[in-house]
Length: 346
Ligand SMILES: *[C@@H]1O[C@H](CO)[C@@H](O)[C@H](O)[C@H]1NC(C)=O
Ligand SMILES: *[C@@H]1O[C@H](CO)[C@@H](O)[C@H](O)[C@H]1NC(C)=O
Ligand SMILES: *[C@@H]1O[C@H](CO)[C@@H](O)[C@H](O)[C@H]1NC(C)=O
Ligand SMILES: CC(=O)N[C@H]1CO[C@H](CO)[C@@H](O)[C@@H]1O
Image (cartoon, rainbow, N blue to C red; front, top):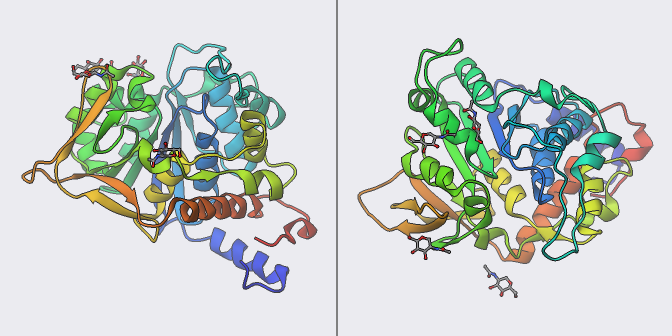
């Protein structure tokens, strides 16, 4: 936006781009553990405001009521009413950093202060069953058209794989995936091998089930090593709109410090492909996950359809790009904002 000298012109450009035809938009489902890290919120911000994305649904793979309500609040703030599913049974868990004592809780606060959307405060039970939501949304989508971005645990995807014919589709889970899903993008694991939280922190045998048995679409992995030292969030915190819920989440969670960019990077790839930021670290072989969640890339030349990502640019440049994108996204005039608010150099 630096080229825009008159901010009103920039605003018009943004509005027009944002109104891009849904026919050309990329259909995306996000499966997130919005709870114990804030980069999930950054990823939702990017997906909910992108002109090139049709956010079909958000599934939550951590069972706190506040996770579902916060997702609803965030989507609603950016003008979305996408359906939300959450894994049951629900709990009232709130995050407490008993490891480093440095991080704060944000989901209940965002859910309360920005209450809205399909699940307003107190209505978490109205959320979809995640597997039903997957089956409904996939069955309604054109063939080979849906990208799934998994940025948390694997319970719901494992349930989708195990699902069978229902009121939405006569296809089994794997057949429905093969018909509708064009790519599964997973933040988790380490490449070529390691032991990473999204893979072990939930139910690691379900991680193994999903990664080792998924068929019918390519899988692209975004590993811990790619996002660990790409930090972002500070520009959103310092220059974002006063009333932005994701900016508030970054403040509550990290006490206004920059955070690793695992999930925003993953969702940028899911939305836009390799672009200028990414390249494939391997184009053949496959990922194998053990029952404890540790993973190893098996370099088998006979196997294609899985790959892992690597940054094509230095980490600080990738961080600057994520920062710019978060900030631009938060300033997109998603509601009836007074024009003056948009006079911001992005
Ligand atoms: C799906 O089935 C596998 C066995 O085929 C099982 O290990 C796994 O727990 C099941 N997933 C869910 C979510 O119940
Ligand atoms: C990230 O930075 C830390 C501290 O400098 C370093 O120990 C670690 O190896 C880096 N990670 C990667 C993937 O380069
Ligand atoms: C996980 O299991 C594998 C295979 O049994 C083992 O080699 C590895 O050491 C385990 N990793 C951890 C971190 O426990
Ligand atoms: C309907 C269904 O299979 N949903 C699954 C979502 O994930 C949880 C894992 O904890 C399963 O128990 C559910 O069955």
